[in-house]
Image (cartoon, rainbow over all chains, first blue to last red; front, top):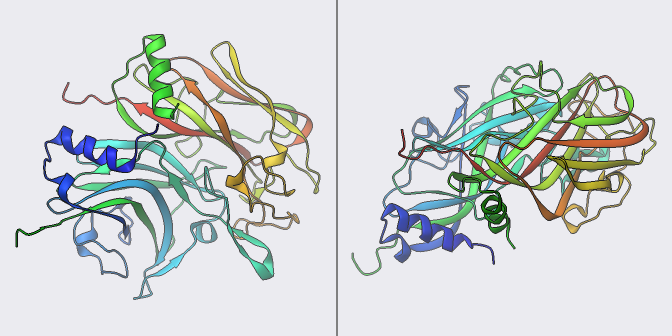
Length: 199
Length: 198
């Protein structure tokens, strides 16, 4: 029987000595941020970004007794000229031949290394694609579904995504599109602080 | 048996290290300008490829790393960067088969890939149910009309540490063009982690 998300959270919490995490509120959640600075890093500058147009974080670490078990990592384009945060499809901006190669870093550890996300969609991702009816265009998803039970971001540990965008046909680095920043979301099982009857 | 247990089982049988950061691993390799050929071999040549075309430097994993292959993904691009149907030409859907070799053992044998192209309404698994979009051939880099080819394996295939592997595509002179073809293998894996050793 496969390890469940809850089991994985409790396993890691136990390893880290987080004895009270098991008493917190389990939930489903996602965090997102963009890279308008074109630094090649996402989430590191979340504190400077507009909430919720660019991010839903105040900083790139969770507070005490909050955590996220990352089960899906997705990429998109955010139109930074739009103050509301206009979400666009990565392939339709950078083209089918683009590939994001990213690392997921938690604390001082790279937990995913040189992972490609192809603009054309996949791996894992082209099931149930949106289709632009009048033109018959395929609008692919640019996601990675984590195998096994996902990766836990513990409380009070900084995390970030480092990335570069390449042309997979030529191998060249693709320059950033003006006014459009790459966004990333991490979706999964969330642990929320629960005071119970303490307050 | 889950992927995690399968990898631990095979690593223990081989005496391979079981420590390391557990993660989702995607390996990929590109062949530039493959042309018309009856055979492609991915993960064989790494010379001249950048980090945007492969994330390996040799056709084997490092000594402390291993992984399970769950998904095989194939894509073909023309020189303008547009995605086209893998191994197809002028609307014809060429039959092609895929084999995976790990060490001296063939672990996937002549698996037909044409049914999971997402272009002819066929798909092996429920994961790809709505992938049947017809390709009209007038796709562009920003207006994608084709789908990559993707197959989710039913059996977990393990790549142990330091064992060579490759992916072969056989056809009757399929047309891969002058752009590039890409193969990605994804699944659960372990990557080297020094822990508190250093």
